[in-house]
Image 1 (tube, helix red, strand yellow):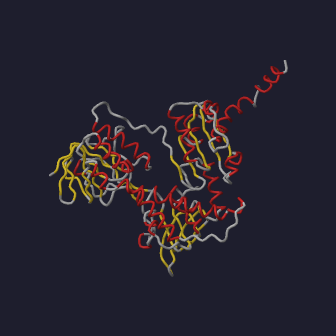
Image 2 (tube, rainbow, N blue to C red):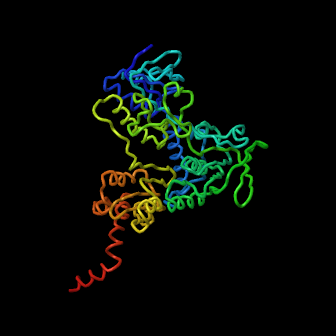
Image 3 (cartoon, rainbow, N blue to C red):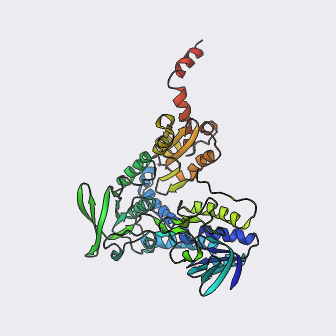
Length: 474
């Protein structure tokens, strides 16, 4: 039996941040992962998918080269080379997550599937690890729908799709959430015929409907078929094709494609850990139950990242890790999680970034008459127009001067959103964004232009223009 100050279960972003920090604080640390370090972000999430998105964008720009006075021939997407490039990027970034790097820090890295023996013992590869404290950061996995024939059809997930070596001529994607629309646009730009089937009445149902509708129009314009309000009832194979039988209010319909992909979300990885044996309360769908300090029902065992089922984002996992590490090893005070200002981005082209409340959520929470919404479109942003990226919108939702939510569909939206994140986090009113000098010509100027609408609504409507005119002409 080996004894540790801290045993970390899960080698994704949250686990790696905790392990690195704990080692630097001088703790005796064990880091356990069932297969390799890096987690979903490195293996099947952020890193590989964003490389594919960039490759797909490159193909799209080359096809549009004539807009910029550049003559090219036909665009040929060499799919095996694209995937080889993706794996090269994974390997390069994965160097930071190598077991050797963490072992040099003093962390004992153990690869293998393990389980709790009790609330102070964790067993892996036949060896028992005794920990004063534990952090569980086992992440999440793709959800498979209980649809007849789906499992036997060989349907892809976001993980197995990254192992393809041949570009499918056609692909049907079940789910119009972030994963579904990102992969849908990527495959379409590579040359596949793409159909997205969504059970709800629109894609990206968590997002502001006005902005998600704008993205929908762009995807359709690019040649993607988007089918909403439709439920898949059965899947089978026929003559090498995936046959998808659906039902909607307008009747039954059958779709056929070379490949089928499931993209309807993720579920926390709680199976096989024997959480019951450690007395840790959890829900198979919602994950491990934690309090505001990320403590489980066993106060010396904390959990963070996707496995707690809050926000399944890498940046939230990293945020959790800092809190979990502090609350585990540092005796001064207890940090609390704060989800008031959590941004995220769907990495389509253009990107779709969001923080805070949608317009509808704000009206439900504060009353319709108390909410003001300010919009500015990228077709009026000079830098975006110059670069041929003038499609999209900035939509800011406010209560008086307070920013309640911001939604950006446009170039570099994932970068631009952070000015609103800071403003909301520090209670900076929309007026101060308007007054701040922004560089011209940049896409960031659009943030100021959107904020300027606050003054436009007050200075150029109602009684004020009449009063101002009288004062000016006195």
